[in-house]
Amino acid sequence: MGEAERGDTAPRLYVSYFCSNNHETRPAFAADAQIPETWDCPRCGLPANLDADNPPPPPKITPYKTHLAYVKERRSDEEAAAILTEALELLRSRRANGEVIY
Image 1 (cartoon, one colour):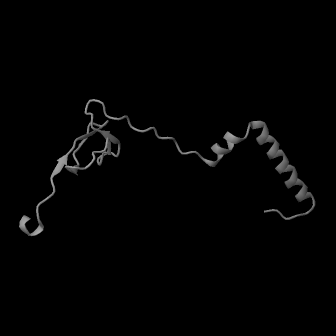
Image 2: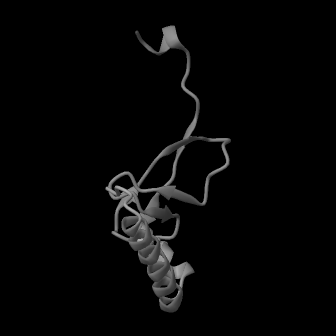
Image 3: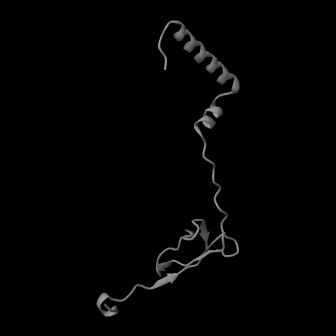
């Protein structure tokens, strides 16, 4: 198949985007398309922009929080000690009454 069978190609515009790892990406856009300000680098996944001298900084990654970390944000040490004391008293009273607790 040649150009005659498929028709003429649309005019294209190649734009250079630069990430903070000094990668250059050149995606093709239609000549009349609106060019986005940022683009994700296909090599490292960092954001890239049109300014080679001033690429965008990498995004800040928040660490994964465990369930315990979220609980510690909501409860103080005194509240945690009171809840633990209450739970232990309930458990000991149930064992004293003869309940089987697993």
